[in-house]
Length: 216
Ligand SMILES: Cc1ncc(C[n+]2csc(CCO)c2C)c(N)n1
Image 1: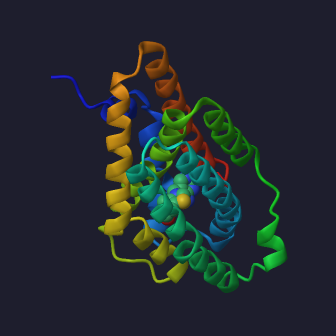
Image 2 (image 1 turned 90 degrees about the vertical axis):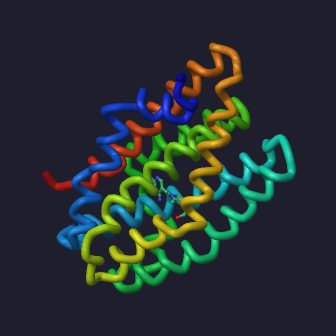
């Protein structure tokens, strides 16, 4: 039996998929041994990423083929801009990072490429936009699940970052994204190949996003 298209995409994105999901950055985060210096670097880049992602979700919503899909994306966008923003603000305060610093960070080269990848997908259409989103969200669900079985970190900014990504609502959203990917199996071969490349590039970028933060 052929695998669902989402599984085909994920399997084809190895070794970068596992490289991202089992990254030493996330392992050290879950073990509560990641330095605040590295995590601060991460959070500054990721806050900018999440801002760009919110715009990406809004454009995906605008391109969505039906009201049901628009509703799911609207709910995700609401969570992204409320609860998630609150987490960032509290964490920046605890880490001694001032608003001036986190509102306009200088993006590292990987963060710049991630933003380009989203723009490129937006120029192609709904399936491409969903593919970018699905890879990013699914990878976060996976690494967080692996870390959630450990003793929760003492530092709330590490602990809550795992918690946010194992919430049932988030898991349902990822399941929905995977369902959307599975629907793209009926697209023609050229489209499927382009989505394969896009998903793999995203997995590579997710791994690289962690790589550039580490000291060693
Ligand atoms: C580089 C990078 N890739 C993916 C995510 C995952 N993500 C982005 S927004 C969001 C919403 C709910 O928390 C989630 C899970 C991230 N943070 N940073």
